[in-house]
Image (tube, rainbow, N blue to C red):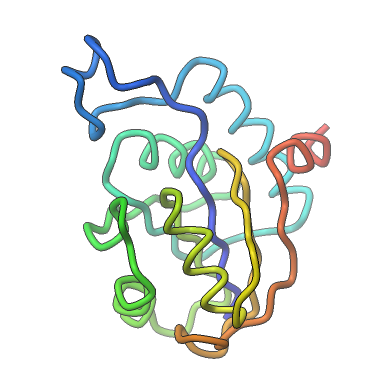
Length: 161
């Protein structure tokens, strides 16, 4: 299975519009535009996830919807993918999926960097907002995957032109 790990796009800051809460933060207009461009880059790479799991927080759900508009499918919110997601949480969520060639998970930092590093056996991995990692997954455990590509959002946007 290929596992696609995507960090949500640029979101508004927690403030009066969000009641100073993290959960309702939405993508900014620029964040939406950039994610549409990045999704076009994902399409140019030939990515076609059969399943798209996402944190239920607004910014992740909106990111996953934009990507699904470009690549097909519908996002499925999963409580285990909230901020603070662990490798065990990811393992439970992905472990419920049977026979998918490609699965995308949209989540948050620092979880995305930490689980990617765990999956590939260590190292420093940095996810900018809208960044994507593509992994060949054998097992959702420490050293259970090979990193096939790490795409910063700027590279995805360029690919989509």
